[in-house]
Amino acid sequence: MIPAAFEYARAGSVQEAAELLGKYGEDAKVLAGGHSLIPLMRLRLAQPSALIDVNSIKELNYIHAEGGKLRVGALTRHVEIQNSDTVKQNLPMLAEIANEVGDNQVRNMGTIGGVVAHADSAGDYPTLALMLDAEIVTNTRRIAAKDFFQDLFTTPLEANELVCEVVFPVASGAHKYIKFRRRLFDWAIVAAAAQQVNGGWRIGLTNVGPTPVRATAVEQALASGSSPEEAAEHASDGLSPSGDIRATPEYKKHLARVLTKRAIQQAQA
Image 1 (cartoon, rainbow, N blue to C red):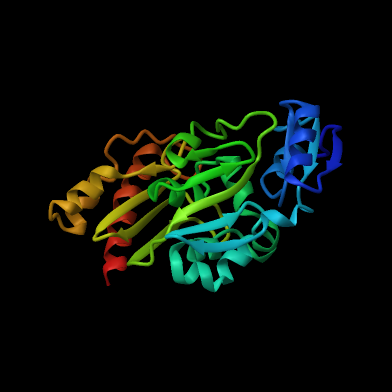
Image 2: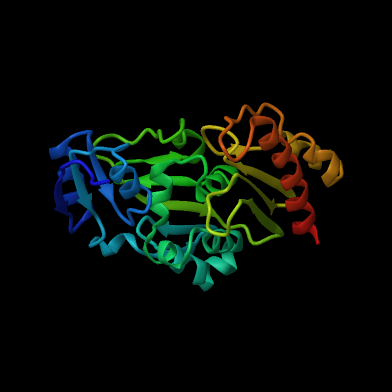
C-alpha cells in the first residue's frame, strides 16, 4: 500500500528537530531508521501529518563509557553497537542483543533511539533498559526506564520531545539473552535476559505484555538460594500476555519459564 500524504522536513540539530516537532504538532513523527514506522505507514496504521528526519544530526551518534555508565546516542545504528569494543567491554549483552536485531539491512539502518521511542513490547533494547534501570535522556529531561515504557507504543514523550541518549549502567558479568522465534530474523515470540550485577541477578522478559517486564520474583528467588529451575518457575508470576497467531497466552507463560531457566543456566555456564 501507499502511505497517506505527509509533509517532510530534515533537521540538522536537536534544537531544530524540537522546533519542527513543535511546529507540526503531536501528529508528527521522528524518522530515524524507519524500519518500524514506514511499514506502519504503508499499511496506514500510522498516518503522521509530518516526518521529521533526524539522520543528519551527527551529534546523536556515539558510544561512550564513563563513570560506570555506558552512554549510547539515539542515532547509533545497531551494527555500530554490535561491533563496538566499548560496548563489548562494558555491557556485552547489549552488543549481543544488537546482533539479534533483524537482518543486515535492518542493523545497518535501525537505531537504538528509534527502538526505544517506538516502545514495542517485542523490542529487545527496552527489556535490557528496564531490567538494568537505564535512563532515557531527551532534549528536555531524563526519564527512568521504569517510567518510560507506559503501555504498548506508549511513552511520556511530549510532542516536541525526542530521545537523544540511552544511559545504561556498566554490567560486564555473566549474562545471556535468549530469543525464541519462528524464523531467524523475526521479532521474539518471547525472549528472556539474565544479567549478573554486583553478585545478584537481573532478569528481563520480552513480549509477555504491553511493556517489557522485569521478573523480580525470579531475582528474589535466586537471591534466596533457589536453583535456576526453581527460580524460573516464578517467571510467569503476574504475567497477562496477549495471544496472537504465533502463541497463546499460556504458551507465552510457558516460554517465559523455560527461557528464563535456560538464560540463567547458560549465563552461569
